[in-house]
Image (cartoon, rainbow, N blue to C red; front, side, top):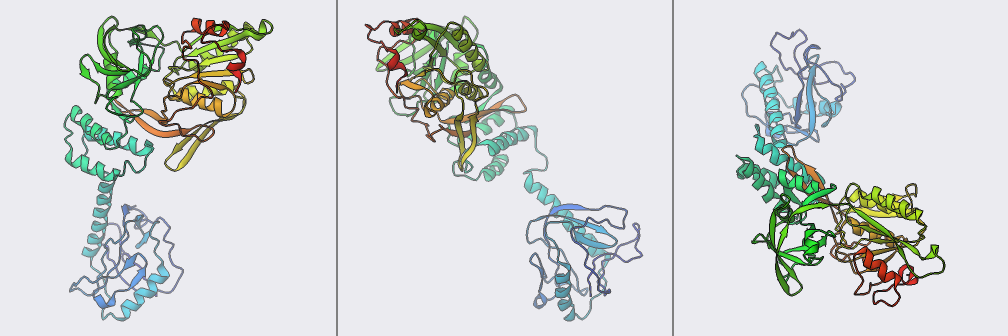
Length: 548
């Protein structure tokens, strides 16, 4: 006996279908993986997440057709009835053809086992007769309701407002990109549901507030929401120029009562802040009399930038001294590279020429500018290089990788890691190398951060360069910037990185091979003077520069 669920053979699309149970000759079971049509003309497939049991009248007659189908009593008075009821969620398609009800995929109905088990149930049955049309309509209706309810489970609301959609866009971005898949030990899906239910999102400002509140639960100062103006401000920092006071800021690596503001990572040479004596390691306590104790770095960056010629008041702590400074904003050109030839004592003119390259930022022009500087210095017969990364607060990660390729003939540049370990490896085979053999020294300090640390770590661990100076800033996290549909954006921590020696430098920094003399200058002219004059207190000979 084979059990078929369907309508009578004479049923047409316009006639009333009946679900019947009948005895038919044994034949090969219908493959449940087929897509079938009802009456070969009308596709009435219903997409649903369900797996439903057939049920029988008596509790004592409960049997299992498959691991997903069970029989339950209905207590109806119309003889044997079969009813669909969900007990597990599985994605499948219910469709009809030639009066048969079959599954497409998901819960695959084993017809032979179903037939044998159902035969046992029918043995206990007094009557197994035609099921009226009403049941067919009820069954299909139940499945349709379940399909709709499943769609609702996937999307929290039937009709999401534009503000809800923006919130969900931000939520999805973090869900996909954020490094910590525990989301600071919370249920990220549950937070979404609760926020859509409870957070007011009637205006754009309320939506922005809801997004900020969501991000705050991550307890990650580098994952930030950026309003349209702040998003554009952040993007401008990777361009060739901006209007401001010429400083890069960040959060102190260790927060304490002594460091309650924002730390200066670097001051652009010749910029307003640099001329006023602000240097890396200083702490900005207030901007225009607004405390920075709870101010985010992007909010501070927006306050520091402004129209050219306008003023800004800064309260800056330098060691134990607190200063109040009035600065005038100006256009700060972010030319990433400055270079010159330095003469040092040696045997022969060629041997005494060193190419000095100062790299101030990793903007979109950085790698090209470094290549150009190397080629220009080579025309002046330099045989060794000094790469100065002091007070370089980083910038574009890809530019850091490209500049490492300039100096390396082969090797790993950086490991990108997430919570599960190494996710990606950036390396080089030497095809982009420009200066892979000349002696190289890299100068670093506590203002060397982010992409600068990636470059310094790669050159040190591959034994390509000698590092001189002090431990670097220690920002071992990587953020990606995502633009949202309304022009706002998110800066999201997507990974952490390790140097080629698998050193996690977050909050530790890259440790140099040797310190620099305390009086070693930062400007190129004075630096070349120290290298040239053996009698100066800051002098470093060629052997001291390039020896490990």
